[in-house]
Length: 109
Image 1 (cartoon, rainbow, N blue to C red):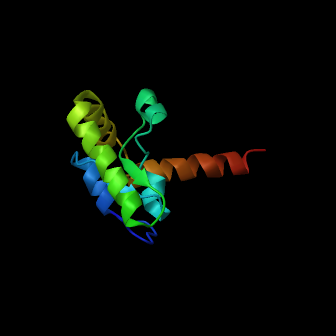
Image 2: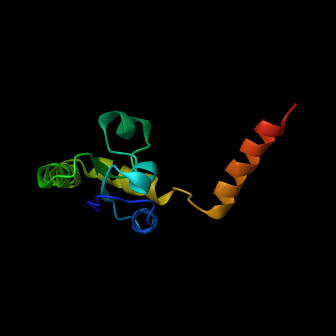
């Protein structure tokens, strides 16, 4: 998803849910919902996809190559990213709970 602008979007959430690892530009909702597969994120078990920054063909191509290298040479990491992505909860129940906790902290004496 090499979007130039992305206020939110649902496609990356569908990808996560069904186990297709997204390659996204780090912008808007794509940035908010996809944790890049950096070595640190992989080690922490939080990686959910592959992100790139500059809106250029080269940046996109490099990130696709990084994803393909992971798929071909590190299948155990690829499976971990798939599983982590599929466990993500972007439901309204989760969001409502976060709002409830936030309002509770704001209203606490």
